[in-house]
Amino acid sequence: MSAAPPPAFLDHVPPLAIAHRGGSLEVEENTLPAFAHAEALGYTHIELDVHATRDGEVVVHHDPTFARMTGDRRAVRTLDWTQVAQLRTHGGAGIPRLAEVLAAFPRLCFTIEVKTDRVIDPLAEVIRRSGALDRVCIGSFSAAPTRRLRARFGARLIWSPAHAGVARLWLRGRGLPLPPGDFALVQVPVSYRGVPIVTPRFVRAAHDAGIRVQVWTVNDRAEMTRLLDMGVDGIMTDRPTLLKELLIGRGEWRPA
Image (cartoon, rainbow, N blue to C red; front, side, top):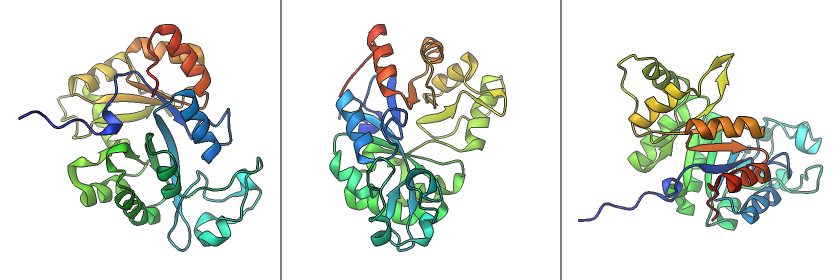
């Protein structure tokens, strides 16, 4: 019997280019125009953030309030969807619902950053209704969202660990005989509070355990080059055009 094909999110040859919030230095972040821009560039993977409205709609937005993006200082959790639907960003885009994004871009994969615990249950329902489990990856600074969503979806859920899982992998890279964890990939910053995270030893420790390393958020060409030369498996960037150009020059661009 042949092995089951990998889920869409993992079905690619690294290095993977990921448009952070759709490419927030090129188009307004977390908007349908941003995601369309990334798709038009040939991107297959996008990172976005989710909150829940007062009435439980999962909206794609980074901050706890709408102040930075729209000038409206109200918090996401205090508004119903009918109110959020009236808001426009400074560039004129609407605040999209996650279900709308998944339906509008059926060929794209998404890293979903969970911003609050109250969005976990409605997020699970959106993923279930959309049939999008194989093309999403869940990440959070807290372990609670991935723990609850793993309980809901089981081993099929693709997820990136919070601080404890990253620390365990980092210590393995320093020679400590710790179990690596049961995640397929790890999404990490280059450094954390001045401590380098992504080092050759970290990448080797991850790869030895069959774990892919995706790094955020990298907007400098020289840093992109350094990380790619180190062997990282993916880069998230706010400058998707720049990363695409760099990967083309290296013969490593793999469009949709």
